[in-house]
Length: 97
Image (cartoon, rainbow, N blue to C red; front, side):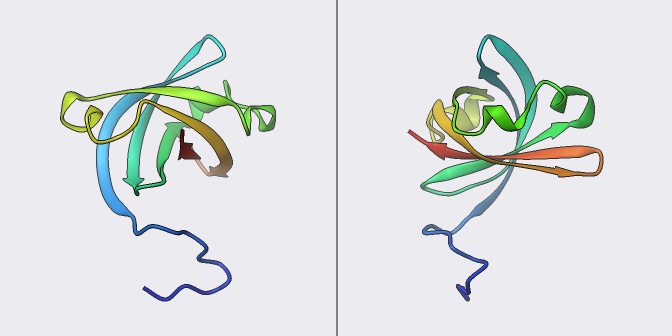
């Protein structure tokens, strides 16, 4: 893998497609896991549900509830490190705790 200035990840990513829920400050938001690495996970949230997220949520601790086939391989707790609005979806980068 070519790691230039834009590619600063420490771990390779694995593509994953799994439904789940993100819990944050008493809110539960449906999400989809797009990819994972040893250090974190990228979640996708539909625009209708993304309104529950704000830039103030960056740095907040979250919990994940995933389908059984992935719940054993993805830690249930993390911290939001980035939000990216991309058209009808919002992507959430999570760092595992």
